[in-house]
Amino acid sequence: MSQDRPVNILLVDDKKENLLALESILEAPGYHLVRALSGQDALLALLAQDYAAIVLDVQMPGMTGIELAQMVRGRKKTQHIPIVFLTAHGDESAIAGYQAGAADFLTKPVQPAVLRSKVAVFAELSRKSSALLAEVEERRQAEERIGQLNKELSERVDQLATVNAELEAFSYTVSHDLRAPLRHIGGFVDMLREECASVMNDVGQRYLGIIAEAAAQMGVLIDDLLAFSRLGRTEMREALVNMEDLVKEVLQEMATDTQGRSIEWELHPLPKVHGDRSMLKQVWVNLLSNAVKYTGPRMPAKIEVGYTEGNGEWEFYVQDNGVGFDMKYANKLFGVFQRLHAAEEFEGTGIGLANVQRTVRRHGGRAWAEGKVDEGATFYFNLPRSVEKSL
Amino acid sequence: MTPLRPILLVDDNLNDVELTLAALKKSKVTNEIVIGRDGDEALDYLYRRGKFQSRELGLPAVVFLDLKMPKVNGIEVLRQMKGDDVLKLVPVVMLTSSREEVDLVTSYKLGVNAFVVKPVGFQEFIDAVGRAGMFWAVVNEAPPVKEPIA
Image (cartoon, rainbow over all chains, first blue to last red; front, side):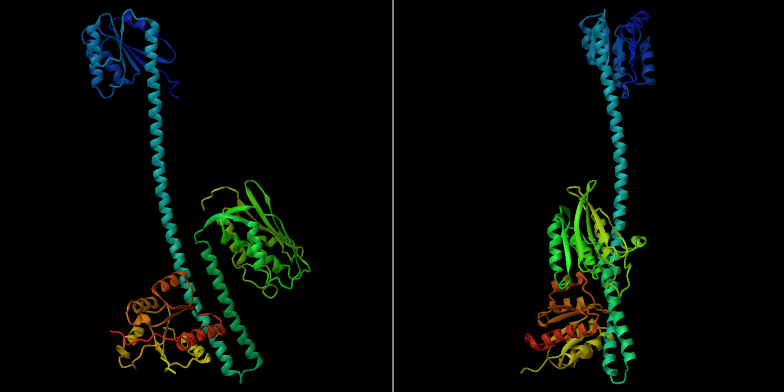
């Protein structure tokens, strides 16, 4: 800090004893005192470094104090340096002195306390000025850095926009072009059945059935994949979402699927969170319908929904007493189209949990699960608790 | 009973054309079906020019339009039809492979009368196409139109 660095004070007087006197008055740890016996010496000293103040005798042979002051004022590098004139004379010098740019005038004999306090003011000024300049330079560099970072950011944003556009085009193509042949397979298989019903045996019919189903399955996969892809790119609409109401809504909509099942629901109160309502609803739909599905063999099925408050986040869970899963495959659960059960056991394409993970990630959280084969499973997801999140 | 006007089916994919014809037949839609292989042919038919210059007078009851076609695509045909004072009265059903939102919005903004996604499952396909055909070509009271000025 500049407070610690001593400031330079230039003392100019043609008489050595005066300089000594000045030095003894001004001697202080914060000052570095430099002597000059003439105007020329003073100018040389001024070339070498910056000074907080110049204490100057008016009456000097050769270059007078006034002339020196004019020169100091005339140079850009030194014009800011305050000059304290010491004079034995009366008023006429004063006016000329001020005109030449003196900051102050003191008559000899100088009162030490007065000289010290005057110099102290200028020294303080000089320190503050240096500090300010240093800060300005720091700010300028920081701004430059920011400008650079902004440039990089905007390049990244452009790249991202391009990638998104490419993905969009890709999805569009998948959408149209992959579906048409599927439709043809399905359609002509059906027409084949009709045309050749009389000549085709059971085996042939069965084979045709498998072909038609495979085509249909592929259609579902394409739809799922497209929805998953879109999930990463749609704009989120943030609002305050009442999770408890949301879960109740989902349960109501699932009523037809759960008809005839004996399910014991344990629904704990849930908080309100910031997020996209329809996306969060989809998370609940996926988790709750999974719980319902995988507790199929249970009578009664037990499904519990609740939350805990963690470190600046809410942790939601859905726990069931269903068929569970082997923890050693836990990391596969949330992969796209990853399943831990065969299609004949439980239907589904394996995209639901991938959607959950994607959605929760977009909200700044993550999803995970714990389970044991035949002893049920618990699915968790957390959401950060910051207010006014920008998504 | 007013005579049935023809249905103009515009689709570049022959398999789709065959399936659509089968679906319409199963749904007992007996209107004559005219096929346009792409947007150009569709417009040629509507304006009675090119290979359709000697078609019978009378605009179709409905146009079933596929979206993705070479040369002039479905959106373009839709735009031209709805931009023509006479042709804009002819009902247009977009019959297409997917419900990409951008297509939906554009089509409806241009004034399409219906947008039907061709289902992958054939039974559903028959239902969808058959019902659309039955409604627009038979049940619906088609607007009275003269020939457009080419």
